[in-house]
Amino acid sequence: MADFKIKPLADRVVVKPAEAEEKTAGGIILPDTAKEKPIEGTVVAVGPGKTSDDGKLIKPEVKVGDRVLYGKYSGTEVTIDGEEYLIMRESDIFGIINK
Image 1: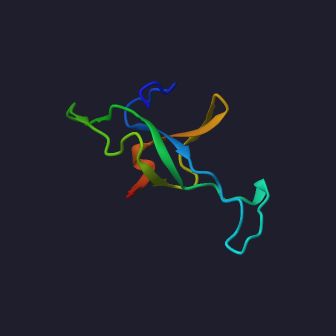
Image 2: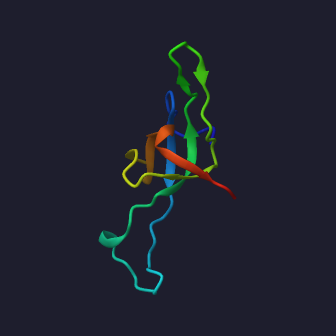
């Protein structure tokens, strides 16, 4: 998203978390308090990268649109225009989910 309202700095990434599961595999509907925090989401904005000790820019491996896996308690939650997002360092992302 070129017009996203946050421009992350350095090696930070903005992720839109996937929706939490509404029901269990057995069909039981879960209340909000019992839902697991998502560990998967879509990258919506990426910073320019991290500067190494010798001054070189290390570009991020993730890009806008990538589906990623991250730690359950990774990042900082923010709300923009009523939507929930996470801002985290690229190193908090475990991997990119292949489509």
